[in-house]
Length: 286
Length: 288
Image (cartoon, rainbow over all chains, first blue to last red; front, top):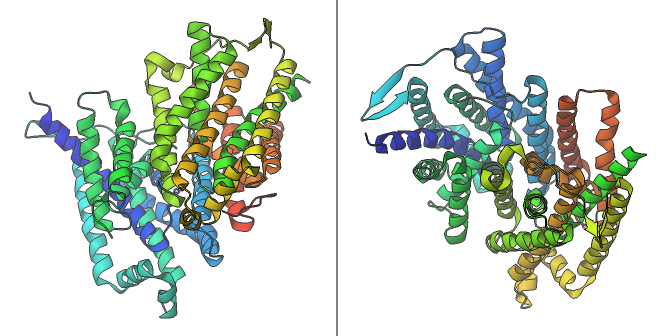
């Protein structure tokens, strides 16, 4: 039996997860112009909320997932409201934002570890259905991952293109000062952007939790993949991020065809370095 | 008394790490989040050379410095073309890669099992076995490195670094190849961090990859941001304060696992509050 179909399926699934992280990351980067390192930890917030509700309280899966996504969004909004908004008011430099987000990431991750311990947990209860497809295997969870990420991609594209909110977001990414002058309430819009971006990150954490499992540090590796996807796709460009995510998924999974799986992170970073050296603006230039 | 000597040694090791990072972040204005990677390279070089080949500590330290310099040359070649966010991000990713190499290259590093039984240094046939003599060795190293970094930052080379920090374009117009300067200071900083790693490995006598992950880099960054960017005295105070602070938490009586996480919460909050209210740190001469 050929291993090729399975590799392709794995690449697509990895690409979907990365594209969710990259979508949220790019959305926030586009409006605020700083690398929000706290973005990844919200994936862990989402995953652990579902863990808490479904495993400890025995809530059914669908409502706990919805609460988990909303809660991750809310935490993201709160971080913006308490930390980043005051930094924006002071016109702090990008590095100050970056260090502050690093602090938020460190603190939140440790709080999760204190509450739930650092142990690896899985969200899935019992076994899921497994489908055979073209000589490869795909689980029900993975089908849901694929479907949800495609749905969110289109939903976000429509939101940005056709609504008043989307127009405001695009205006702020072009020029925050001018948007303020023409009467856009930038703080309100950026707050909402943080909510949406963080909720998407939360969803990706939950999906990873069902597919493999959750641990407090999971956000870091997801964040790194999302950021790499955004950079190789074209930073600040929503569609570029998706393209980069799938490219990264394929390179990673085909890379470990011959060498062992622990080197995925190293391969991903190698891809990033190659792009930084030869095409730092990414595939799609904004 | 032993306890205070232990804290003194830790403060010295982190002071060295802080001094090394300050050359890049404070004086050159490049946000590097990868110091733990070079720290780990030094520690593992010493650990492997001493336990498997019986090499003298100071020889192993020298070899570690060479390896750190070569690695820094490689990664710095890419990073020195960037500044700001991209530099931070690239260095951030590099730390994760070095950590995953330490964890997964089991043939060399024994992976998560770590390397036990690392001997203390030996000078002219005398082993630095007591903690007090090790403290003296560490403090001497701090003094040497402090003097060295003061010399670097006050030299003409150091003035170019500060100029890069203030306005890279302007100094380029004067004909300076700024990415050479960035690369050189990145390598010097890596070499100093590897010295701290060698000292750490030989003092603790057991190392595993978890001491060299991203959290460690963030901790070193907190030291210099708290103490003050571009102020070497401030860095020493930052190291003293941040090493002693969690010791106070220890007396509050948390279980060890929770105490370790509490430290991370405290470091994270310190970074956030400094950024909000005093981005140059307590004694800093440069604002991020």
